[in-house]
Image: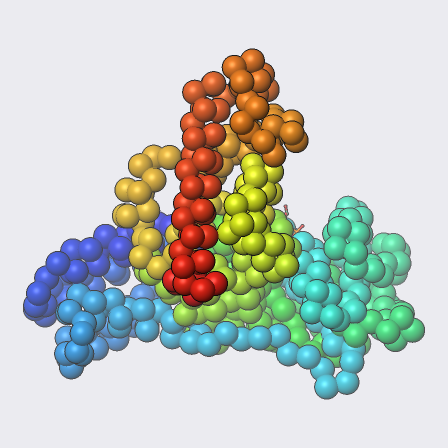
Length: 445
Ligand code: GDP
């Protein structure tokens, strides 16, 4: 998970502060020494760490005592605010041209995630009602054009390509004409990368820039390359000029140093972060939400976004109706689990709930992986016939044995699931009764 190590370390430091009624200057300094080590280990740029610690220490030592917060909480509050500031304070949205088409140039080194991010971004723009066009300008890597075509097909986005014989500049020119004829209002140009920054690459990008006059040049960098990503961003910005950064593969980067440093070093905002392979895993970057995640304070807003993107409102309403009218079946239970699964690993989702920090989440789960548990339950229900799912009371010994064999689970596990399901239904019935007692209103609505 992104920032996992840093998050764990910071939470360790703050756990020690939390218990204290009063903080001395020495307490703050000790804590800050540990925060400094944690940030350096997360591969945050050294100068940034130094400034960060200085600012937090000054604020924490000289701070006025706020009502309602104990001294430990106050330090956390200051660290939270400074982390947010470090990452750019507010969300930086994509801008659109006043007169379409809006052209975005996707640039970056090979393997950073340009092609996949272009596809994800185009897919999201399509969802917002725009009509994007992907343009294949990577004429050096033989598989690149094909890759963009596959990505385009996945998201149902047209891809403009002219093979690998013309220059990227000529292809870009033709792409603009094509877009005008086909009423594409957003054009995403997937440029070629190189293994390292070199003059040839920069010249080519300059030439494309002159022809297409992009609304934004978006630099795609790989979070897992740490401070190298920051250096790459500095070079692209000074030689070409960039408008924003897409930082990919943050899902695999337990340190997070690049994400924390790049804004301060380049003064260019991270606009999106890549948190996985799916379209919605390219998330808009919110500094406050990220700080909250790092400090184990949850990220309920991202959780809500995920629910909204993945769960159909109408379906959710019908499900609620079924629950309250006692019609909820194992079939519904299965479909509900499948919807939840679309939102990502359960443990990550649980970590977004405020108060669910590393300590109590680990304690609550006690070594159990909730995604694995859900997969077991799913396998059992999937091994049932539709008739059995709708009416589990027909499940006798031989049927249970067949289901256990089919799902690779034991009969005891099948029985446990049935019992849990019965209890769930009982609870729903109680809620239903409460609702009736309150004239059609649930107590917590
Ligand atoms: P390009 O050479 O810059 O066009 O890079 P690609 O788009 O081909 O991406 C390189 C690899 O990184 C591919 O295997 C992608 O699936 C993977 N990738 C891109 N973004 C992410 C991300 O946010 N998370 C993860 N886990 N993988 C990613």
